[in-house]
Length: 170
Image (cartoon, rainbow, N blue to C red; front, side, top):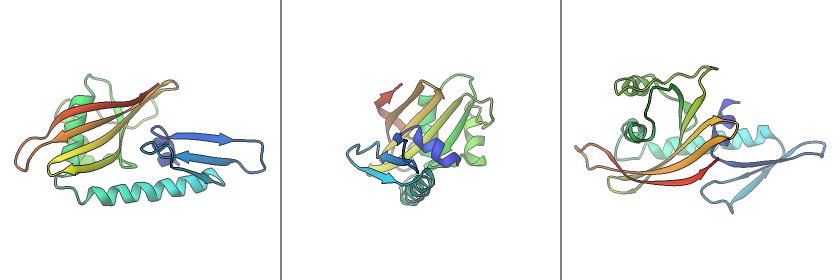
């Protein structure tokens, strides 16, 4: 399942073999002490789907549209002509978001030859008009990372990135 692959880029995952059925341990990247064991990767996939469903539900309550927040982050996070595949809260980016990113010079396309995958895995409003977006990228077998962007802007103002915190890089 593509969702599990995408989400695992920003997660710590260990698979223990040797048993009749593989045991999978998933640790929340935002709280590494919070780990869960699953009897199979299918159980993990189902859990991650529920997790992304709850993230999408939380995003609906934000005071600014998610699309605006994503564009603000990607305007700073990704520069250059290289195309990328974009996933937002466990789903491929919408046509409207891809169109908006194209208007600022980005090429979003999800094809086998696309080397770079970008993920927005979490969005939180921490104060009125102040947001944290978790942005992860995967660009090869030993090329990945996760960054938290702090974005702010009052209603009617343009959103701007005010801080960037690197969480991990490989």
